[in-house]
Length: 434
Image 1 (tube, rainbow, N blue to C red):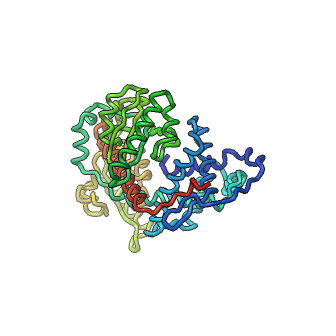
Image 2 (image 1 turned 45 degrees about the vertical axis):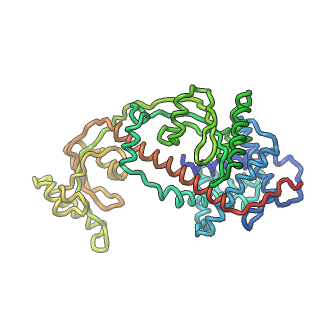
Image 3 (image 1 turned 180 degrees about the vertical axis):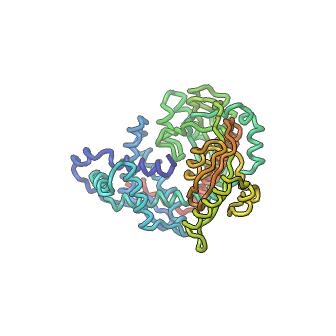
């Protein structure tokens, strides 16, 4: 499931999980006050209380021990400030999610939970959450996702040299790329921080490590100390391939045994503590059936109707069945880039073509010639030349390495982008003003 979809489902689950309890609690109307000012916007005590309530429910569901309430409040307030800074920048730079787009997203979430939109609304409101507020939370999630896409994912490229460099590394030379299940604590250091701030941040990291060494569960220390987005999940990053981890982490992880915790690690982002939960390799070969095929494509446009395209292909099929050369007819008639090669598409793996084309191609025997097949590109006449079973492990590894390097670079780029936004923002704390 994509990360954005997961976050939306999690948000929904947190909001509706305690319906019965909410119905029995007596309504409380606390006096609201401002706990922080972020540029020109305020964060109120009521907003923080709601975030605390959801966080406690999430940690309970995941069996993560909750830190003391004052610590949790400070952690969550800092996350709310960082989130608010991102949303402000997104609005200022033109990112919008209109009501039509938002309604479509809500329909998808409701459908994924096997509900109509009315049932979905009732489930949210039964927990005392106004549906209008829930809508805005989802809108913000989408905005943050689009901000990440624009500022990091769409700007990251991975060169062939980077892929080759990865495979030349010790990790890349392994038969199957190593994966690590790890947990992580990050103590951030602001950009251009002076020695006093750096030393204070280092001392905080050493204090967190001392808590772990004396037996406090890693998850509880992460929830209390970590500045990373996954802190309330106990710092759990799940399974990560080597190519998606900072190179700085890999020698440390390779020196750890499952269950062990690293010393404090310094990076440009701050100070890190890693716990290796488990490690595994991926060495299962991937063998797929490939098809060598060729085709003739007639596109549909203002001059060629669906019926005309189909009629032309039926006439070409009759000529081929009567002995005409498929390749020559493709060169003369096909409206695809493959026409110059006689319509030859080379060896095709599953997923290389659109589903309509692939289904028709897979139904043909070797040497078989299809009836006209419609796809979003137009109408096709397909012929299968050969089939083979091919080990595509190397190709898969290259593709996965490229995707994982790209994701790692996007993660690093966005973390740096958010850190710069946060450092440039005006923030006034009022949480201690009781």
